[in-house]
Length: 438
Image (tube, rainbow, N blue to C red; front, top):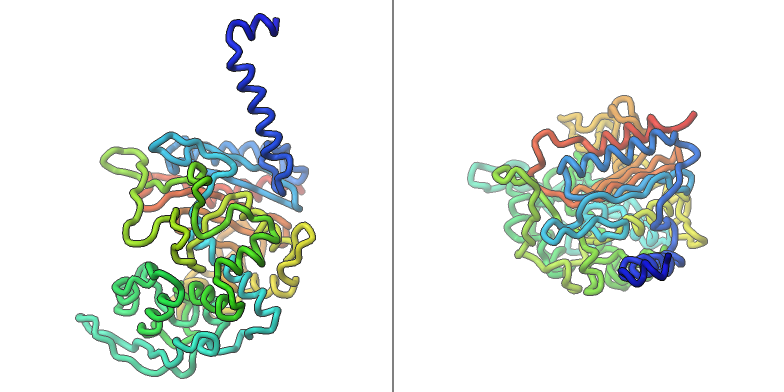
């Protein structure tokens, strides 16, 4: 029978054999988590995992996003690791488990870990003024008020911002991502985030006042790019070299860097948005105001520059779940990880809060992570102490230390969304916690 089939059409047979062998050799030496189908996890109901996978696939089917990769891990075991949809609409490239993503602000926790590694070496302390490590930022003024023409009244702060405050976004820096005030406008006008390198970025930031007295508000800011610069100054290495040599290589994160290599271009997902006129998703055009992701010389932005895979980021998160260690590689001490996931905002402040606004009740901020302190007040299903963050193109993760569990959702979407689009983050979390077995 086999001989007869091969005489008729041998291509499908040899294609199947090639797929089996390529799959084996591709994954035989892969580090955890494996890029293969997973069986159900013993601490989740099988119905729950099926419901989770179906819900995420439906979000793709409904065209809320072009494609998605999702991963759920508990006690170091994979409960589900799936992909659905397309990585690129223009050439119909399928979303795969090893697809590469712009993780944008999910770069920030990586930068925080790097800086904490240097804290453990005694190279800085939380109460140090930032200017001790970045002299160019000494003597910054505060914007007290401004008129309709954008003219600012400035004053000296009562004290300089500290390292603790650039770690929890209460130092007073702007960002330029939003805000109609003159400080954020200066970030946009001077193209801070399009700087050629971190030296240029610091030079531009040094010319822009602070928004408020250090410690008085939470304001999402350029602080983590400043952290990347500090890593360079304290380590004597470029930021990218430090991350590769001291974090990515030890954790076997071979897909994570500030640019996409030529051999990985086919794995790189594109960003999509909803087009109301066409009533469909469309692929966004690339920005022309800064170097391409294919340019190895682009800015090594600690606030949002990395490209990574779900597999790589899972290894980073599992290291944190393990309180600083993975596969025999110790990156941080348990104490350092606990500091990172502990709220450090001053009393009375919440995430996104100020002295006159409540912000996100029940949530605070540690070292480059948001922290859920009171899930009831926050109206979230997670355990107390869960910490999380996300990226501008929709990637998101959370770690629940109490349950020894983490989740990663990887998408590439910016701009308008489909009318009535699902709240995928809440849907995933609700199903996951509902699926935990007693």
